[in-house]
Length: 217
Length: 139
Image 1 (cartoon, rainbow over the protein chains, first blue to last red):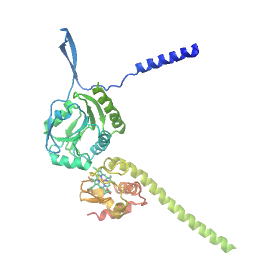
Image 2: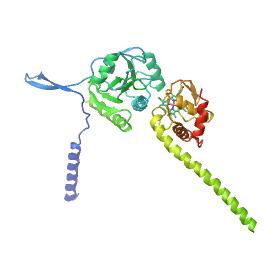
Image 3: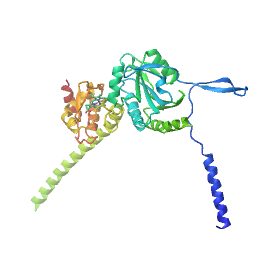
């Protein structure tokens, strides 16, 4: 090899190495309120830790009338939403889209789905069961849960940051936002996607593997 | 010779009249179809899907040509008044509930032209007059 081409090779190699070391892995943001806490480091000095907003403990009946708690989603990534079975506006679109997402991850046990009904009067577990069967997603991977108005509505607005409301002027009786909320293994909010918007749903599909990879390290 | 020219002229006029009539109807049908598609996207697509594919066993598809032909006179009533009686589409029984849509006759005609000519159907024009007649026979 002539010295000149050796030099070119060396430069090329250096550039490639530099470029690949520059490439940063994509990381999802952490949403919600945050707080700080003073902690004692192992060497006795004081340090500051960030406390992120997390989904608090919950307990709801699912479509099989079994109580579901956070334990169910331990070490999993999950997507939560709020809907009701007799909804004639956005819920069919949200669940049409979420069903497609669930099919993409059907073989991955680390991804789960959690749909809360906001119709505390009508959507009892047996109604949810029928709905899940008709949607074609009845199984342990996608939980449909029913709970008292207070706990579900507070959880929606304070923890998942999704607005839900009873509205007698609406023909369905309820109004709510159509967000699909992505929760990580530490119960933190890592994304919120409009479930009626195909581009945002596609983004959710891309973000789930990023979040799964994060847990692997 | 004069007779021949006369006959040809008359038949030519008749033929062109026939064709222009037909294109007038096609033009009207196309206009209804386009407006009907907008109405469909606004009112129906969330449940019945962009391709009329339905949603699981919750909402039936609109792709069953036999159903669409056999029930053409009932479509206006189904849309105007909603539907909760079980229906069989593509051999599957659906027991859901479709809400009522208080649409004007012209809108009903347009959306019906759309759903009976999209999704693989080709049933042609459906007029406001037909909507009016069909609505008289709602159960």
